Amino acid sequence: MHNCVGGYKERVASGSTQVVYIRKIDDIDKSFGTMEISTRETIIQARGKYNKDLPEDADAFVKDYKQTHEGWL
Image (cartoon, rainbow, N blue to C red; front, side):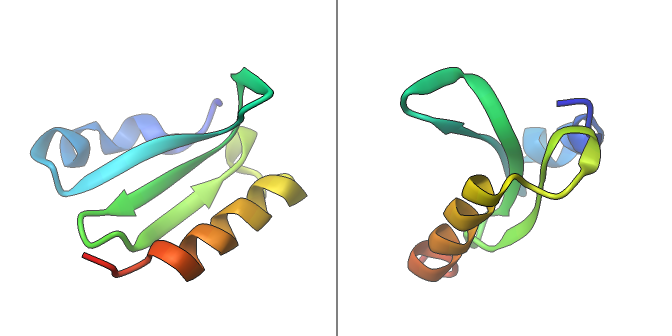
């Protein structure tokens, strides 16, 4: 994705954050964005390729995720 997610490897290794790719079921091999989620299920950030804004459909997914999952643990 050519974004800054590689800089978070220590946080991922320590378990304080998770980094996930945003993909479509019908295009599973392509990443549309990257999302960093804290251990409390709070979205820290979500970015597109080259740290740009997410494509519209990926942004809609993040908003839906936030509404239905954030802080549920």
